[in-house]
Image (cartoon, rainbow, N blue to C red; front, side):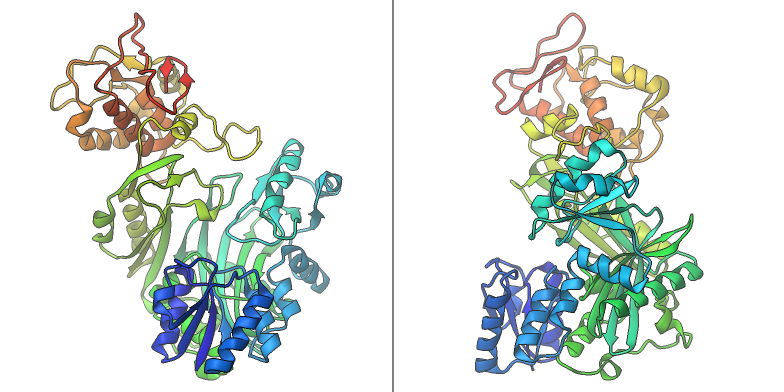
Amino acid sequence: MTVFILGAGVMQIPAIRAAKGLGWTVVVADADPEAPGIDLADFFLPVDLKDAEGLAAAARGIRTEFGLDGVFTAGTDFSASAAYIAVQLGLPGIPYEVALAASDKLRMRSVLKAAGVASPRFVEAKSSSDLAAAAALGFPLVVKPADNMGARGCRAVRDPSELAAAVAAALPFSRSGRAIVEEYVEGPEFSIDALVDGDEILIRGIADRHISFDPYFVELGHTMPSGADPEIQAEVLRVFRLAVRALGIRSGAAKGDMKHCPSGGGAVVGEIAARLSGGYMSGWTYPYASGIDVTREALLLSVGIPLSAARQKWSGLPRDAEERGFAVDMGWASAERAFVSIPGKVASVEGCVEAERMPYVKQLFLRVGPGDAVVFPSNNVQKCGNVISQAPTREAAAEAAEAAARALIIRLAPGYLETEAYLRGEGRPDSNADSSWPPFAFKVEGDAALDLAAMPEYSAEAELGPDLPPFAPFARACEVEGADWSGRLFAASAELLRERASKAHARSPRLVPAGRFWRALARGGIQAGLYVLDTEAARNGSPPRAKADGTAAYDAAVAGTAGSKGGRG
């Protein structure tokens, strides 16, 4: 057998390995000549996945040289390219028009609406002339590019004043220059992977989807099996199947992002794709939770092997467990969690060995390294990496993945313009006037907020010794409630920074950061606090002089920084 796999990135590696495990010849195409899956395949073709004609020509060449039995993709937005190749060469697959409907959000919504499948009301938006029709849907709304993935250009709009900017921000992410504006549906989210062969739709996994950083929709992970009530899961799966049938997907894989609205309406379709999911679910989380290699099954379908022969069997399960899609009966669970960064330039990534050695941790994926620029994520491709666990219970799997993510710290280069702007509350990724984004790591309220606001940037009162931190104390630190996006507490974060502080941070006697440190910790968590300490250590050859009020001036020679209240940053 010979298979043509579209994409050679991390998300396609499970497919490449599965195909090689079947003894097949594997040809991959990717626009990136350094894609990590290339070395695992037999042959590589440098073709852009958007170039359907170029891919079809490449497939003809493969067929001439080796024979060609199937075309496959997973975790990409190019199921339409795969379908185009299949149609052109008479390979197993779905019609090209079906694949377009499963990858273009406007087409998808139109098909689902015509079929009466629960889906948000929507309008197309290509310019400011479409804003009135969009606003007529009522608020809140969601704005997305019509044809992209990874939540790029996607955000919630809760006020009419935000609509124009949101549409303008979404359009550049659309290959066709179109956006979709649709009703916002409140409720928990679910990810589903399924295999389809004619009338049979075999659910292969349903996971809880964890979304953060409103108004954006950043997926911080999955947990499988889902913790939702069985009745809710059954309803979500029922509507998912209706959507798959309405779209006309009858061969291969189907992936769904679904919501359940508890206040009315029940299950609602977010999106359906004619492929397996990305985001580590189909390639890692689901196999860890179920023991089933769904990618292998989908590959067999892609070369025309019927589902009855391709499907793996679960053992020791209730008779209907497979159909319901529950993996809980396997006695295993898996969780995937992302870790993120505030804006800046990476100096180092710390804690990798510690995270990988934690109980139940199976995989650590790093997407950044020293010298890379990082931003606070407003979409799924801006995250810094992911941790995946496998454990006997759902709770243990989640705790393991979250603990490993907390162990990882993206340490930023000191004195960096983008980081300083972030700490001042600047540098938002679009023209949104909502100053609450990017979110604060900690919400400081009441007397603690008043004292923190009044705290001078620097303090000259501290005489540093080996057991004292390189920052002034904040008496109300223990009054700050809640955890940051990594699950760390405010006072505990400061204590961890005190423990981590290197000897280079300690200069005795000298001015030490006071309000600058604690306000940074509130803004960006342990990463921002460490950045302040590293920035101070970097300029320790010329420490700032004290002013009468205890504040200090930064060295004006620090490159790439701008002024801030109480000094220069």
